[in-house]
Amino acid sequence: MVEFCPECSNLLRKKVFDGHSVLVCRCGFQKDFNLTNEEITREIKMKKKALEKNLIVVPHEEKISVHPIVKKYCPKCNHTEAEAWQEQTRGADEPSTSFFRCLVCKHTWREY
Ligand SMILES: [Zn+2]
Ligand SMILES: [Zn+2]
Image (cartoon, protein in one colour):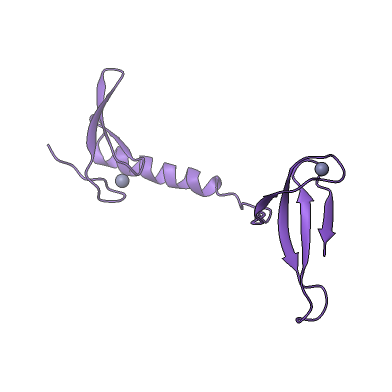
């Protein structure tokens, strides 16, 4: 018996849970062998409603630092790893300043 998922049209696979067989889809859809089509439709609707309710606005994640980690002595806590980045502080023809931030104590310093 071959059946397809009513939600995403993928092939359903047979699995056995606690002695009774269900058809499962990789999208998460499950179909009990004993359920009628009506019951299944109702279940899908309920599931969709639940999903809508659970739709929370995820706050933007804090900007993840993409600075490379370098071996640097933190002047404050003597840790040996720090984030490093460069910033152009004055004119474009001036050499940029290297900034370092200690991974442990977050102390930030710069070197010219
Ligand atoms: Zn599916
Ligand atoms: Zn430190």
